[in-house]
Image 1 (cartoon, rainbow, N blue to C red):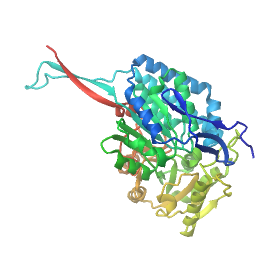
Image 2 (cartoon, rainbow, N blue to C red; image 1 turned 90 degrees about the vertical axis):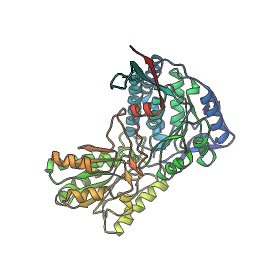
Image 3 (cartoon, helix red, strand yellow; image 1 turned 135 degrees about the horizontal axis):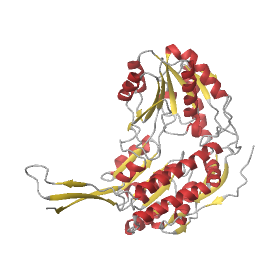
Length: 483
């Protein structure tokens, strides 16, 4: 078992350009060994309050060109330090190096796209002489930043999820206070320092740390907050919606994303679908809101499809996250792994067949393949946030497949494997989700495209760089005489 060779990292909050510490600290642990690899301050409401005061008082004056340069420099620093960033991603999250490097690459894309969009003028012009009642005027729009944005981020993407919030904020000249989860806070602090190095005024991005009970309420109710952007679990998201009141909120919550395998596929197509299924279920240790959490395969092709999935799952090399050859590392902690394993065997008690389970060791959860999972079992009705590969056999009736797919409380993303264009159209129209990907994982997107869910997966507000830039601004309309 490889142990982290890096000394314990003792970090501070980043508030108004200062490094702020507290006597009490929160330990950050490496999931593979449960060793302490860092500490962050146990901040409280007073720290968040101070950060929001600073953010609201600061009026950014960066030109579009200056914003673009900061964003592009940030992307370049991330690219140049990719290995170091991935090292810490692996330490605090427990994912394998391969997945950590991929996340660093994705965040490069986020800052690059935001830099490209920052220089585009986003105003509109409306001529007013369009009707008999019109006048010789023109109406113009411009987008303006808000006072302060509160960003609350989850454990599963410690870099990319923060990037998706701060990059659009910079592009629109906004000030943001970020509270990363206490489970994986170190990477957010690293990103803050990279942004300052790239030239961002520290007032525009501050990082506070602490336990939710001590600091969380201030991140929602502070009087200076105009917008809350939250990614995380459903109960907390609904609590934020209740407490936020008049504040605008973007809530990106859980998912229970199906990959649907239809019966028009030949063996080569089924092989391709099996590759998508296993990769989608195990990427980032299954800790993605858009991971494949249910594989709905129609009965008439299931017997051919299941052995292909089993073969690919058995080929995954899982183990030490620090080993460059490891393809699957840990989940966030042993308690989570134990819960997901428990759900597998609860499903087995209902009639499911466990085809492959090499055995859990602490937070190290292997890719467990389960066939004939009842579609109403907890394993696939709740969000099982780990590398489980659950196969649900469904009838050769597309309408019934859609009904089963839509039967959970979630509505984030989905994937459909079919070669019949009419069926593609039907599923795009019939699935109650925010995204439908044909011949791709549910989570496929580019960092600029709209992303978000409905039902318990979110309040319908889309993320992605372009949509976030719109959401983070107020539209001002003005008009002028125009002969």
